[in-house]
Amino acid sequence: MTATTLEPSLPTPTRHRVSPLAGVRHGLTIGWRNLVRVKNAPEQLIGFVLQPILFIALFVFLFGGAISGDWRTYLQFVLPGILVQTVVFASMGTGASLADDITKGVFDRFRSLPIARWAPLLGAVLADLATYVVSVLVVLVAGLVLGFDFTGGPLGVLAGCLLVLAFTFALSWVTATVGLLVRKPSGVQALAIVVMMPLTFGSNLFADPSSMPGWLQAWVEVNPVSHLITATRGLFAGDPAAGATVAAVAWAVGIVVVFAPLAVWLYRRRA
Image (cartoon, rainbow, N blue to C red):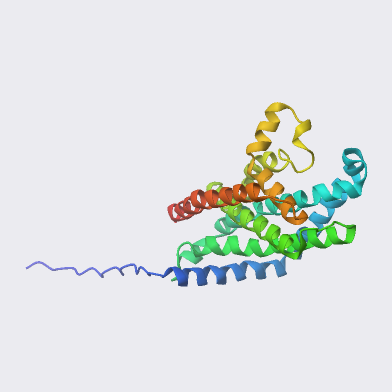
């Protein structure tokens, strides 16, 4: 007679099916959690507020007279570009915060919860979008104080700001992808700066491209940030900017279509 050993059955992993609407709700909840973290690190908020003011003070008062003859004329040219530059650089924070959460095991905790798998990514991007709004408001207030002439009216200013935020929302998916590829948070800034520097400084932000070498003019012409700056200048000033606006929107949509699914795929792969 042989004895039969019964092994305890292992629990079957439960898969939670989450509707897209519930996933968005989960993303908003995680986004709020990321925003609350700023309360414990107020230096981040100081950076969002002080950085745009420093950019405006340095570029307008330091280079304004040399480039345009006087700083007031240069302010009309450069302020929309500084607005774009501020939020584009701020988008690097999305990748850095993602890499930091992954390193600390926060995302492992998220994966154990009955939430949409992509909700942590959406939450990180939405939380940073809220901080971009703070930076945009700071630039607008600084422009009003210094005497920037918003001849495009409230609707033009609103359209310009929404266009900049939409483009930066798209760009956040690029930095999120970088954050999922690197092993340490410090690697995000090292890789992202390689992309952001040619996009911002290699654009029509600080000077008219007509004075640049031919090869650089060719890059400025195709640079998506140049289209965004041209569109924002036109909307703020009430000038026709339909072509640049369409180009900036097309770039934003294209970036989201490519990098949002790629970021979600990388996140699932790391899981």
